[in-house]
Length: 130
Image 1 (spheres, rainbow, N blue to C red):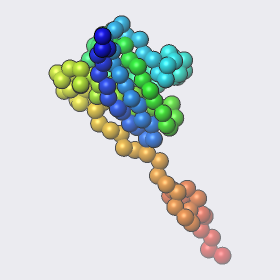
Image 2 (tube, helix red, strand yellow):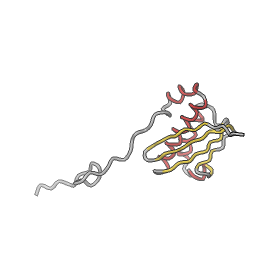
Image 3 (cartoon, rainbow, N blue to C red):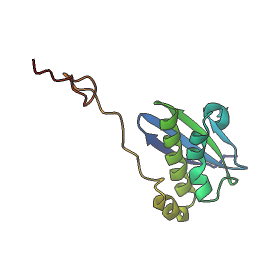
Image 4 (tube, helix red, strand yellow):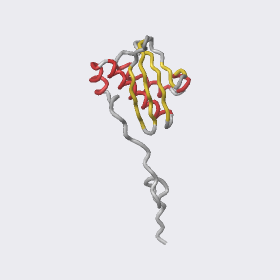
């Protein structure tokens, strides 16, 4: 018997998350660990579960996530986008709710590179007149 699931990819900063939604009871596993173990900060767990709460699907699917790259907050953002995209694959009627709340848009903000002659991306050395 083939297991049916809905798969999508989410990205944020340098993080990339592959999300699979299985019909189930609402458990969320991140890199084969419980979400509360992988993300100890409550803010990150709120970011992740937000698309499921907006569509009232938190008890309809078990979520399996493989995430890599970046830090925990970037990973949480990537997972949220992946969950939203997977929900759209599962049910096209949820797309308008997710799009209106901004879950389907890729957040393109990333760290700007350091330029030569500067201390950071934009901070210049202090100017001395004499």
